[in-house]
Each structure stands twice: as C-alpha cells, then as structure tokens.
Image (cartoon, rainbow, N blue to C red; front, side, top):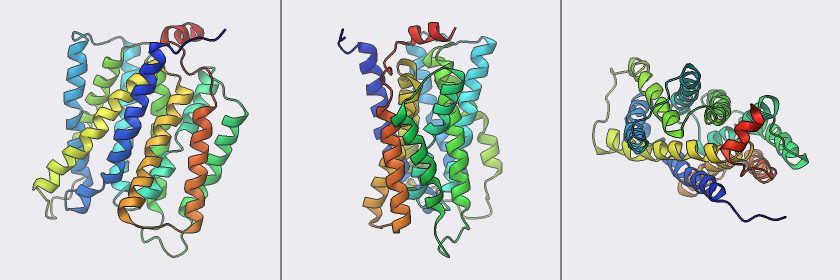
Length: 308
C-alpha cells in the first residue's frame, strides 16, 4: 500500500537542501578572507562566534531546555569537537590547495558515515550504494595526481582526508545523538565546543605579520561563515528527521561538489583530465549513495525503537 509523503519527510529534505545550498556557497568563498590578509586561524575564531546567534535562537525556541545527561553531553561534545576540529583543518587546507579539489575529497565523507551506520546502527544499503562506495574509493587517488605541479607537496590532500574522516564521524554521531537528545541541544554543544577551541586557533596565529582588520577581513569572514553556521543548524535537523545513510551523502557530498562547481565557474580554470575524472567519480559516487536507500523517511521515534 502506498503512503503519501509525511511532514517528517518534507522536513528532513528541506533542511538537507538548505544545508547543501548554504554550504556550497560558503565553501566556494571560504578562502577569500585568508587571501586578503586575514589569517585562517582568525577565520576559525570568527566562524565559532557566528555559531552563537543561531544556537541561542533555537534554544530560546525550545524554552531553554538543554539536555544535560552524561550520555547527551558525550554525544554533544563528540559532534562538536569533530565538527570544529575539521573546520580548523579545513581553513588551513584552503590556503594550500584549490577548493575545487579539496571539497570533492571532503564530499566522500559519507563513506565513513555509511560504514559506521551499517556496522553500529544496522542501516543498510544495496548494490547501488556499494558501487557508489567503490567509485568513491577510486576517486581518492586522482586528486593528488599532479606531477611536479603541487607547490605544497600534496599537504592539502592529507588535510582534506582528515576533514573527510572528521565529518564522516561527526555525521554518524549526529544521527546517534538525535536518539538521545534534542536538536537544539546538539547545536548548542556544537557552538560550545567551537568556542572552546578559539584559544587554540588564537595561539596558532602569527601576529608578527600584518593582519587585515578592514571590511574585507573579519567582516567579510563573518558574512561568509554565517552561511556555514546556519547550514550546520539545518543539518542537525536533517539528521533528526532523516536517515543517516541518505542525509550524509546528500549534504556532506552534495555541498562540497556544489562548491567545486561554483569554484570552477568563478575562477574560470579547468583542472587536468585526471582530476576531472576524479571529480566525475566523486559526483557519481555521491549520487549513487544518495538515491540508494528507500527507508530514509523513518520518523526518529521509530528508528530509536529499532535500535533499542
């Protein structure tokens, strides 16, 4: 018997697509501030501060009900630290490599999420999803195929791989966190851990060099990073109402690939044939991972019962 689309299904999809759009634009322009003399470490500080307004707004809407159980605290801190740690590394990576290659690598983070969801949460994917994972693994080596052309010795690739792992793990913990705490509490802990790492980023800043404090420095960074903050909030609710095995590919893969396309168009550059193959493989893998599951719209309550 066929069923009409549920409000829950529309909620997760709307939130996921909002994340894709906001993160796609954010990723394409995230390197502007460092290029104009505002260090990536300070960009991190600005990003952490932009998390405060949306966190307080949604917590106020929840009547300031914050989950404080040890289990909720552990999940919230895991999600926050993985996300913030990945952000800090990413801000450094975009100063050492091209965004149109960095973000396709990051787009493969759903492979990590799907593997963990399969092993630990019992979520399943079929042949199409398995083939998508294979294509994703095939795409990885192509991004570092640049004989004599990488002035940074491929360091951006390793940083991108670390971000990929962090965000893949974060997506898994974000889904599992939604089973034990509210979305508002998850995002509050994400904001809190982001702020906690500000002293680390501040200490890593080289203040011996001139720092752009003008409109195209911290203020431009804030305008760009607020897109990331709002996208992170909608991502939390996409995971709350959707299945991790489909939300992760749609958001963590769709947004970076959108970034790659925007970057290629705005920069007017064309990567080599090997890297084009890699981008194509990553895109195909993301689409296959996204369309494979057929139970993505399970309500969060039903999924919680199946895991308990």
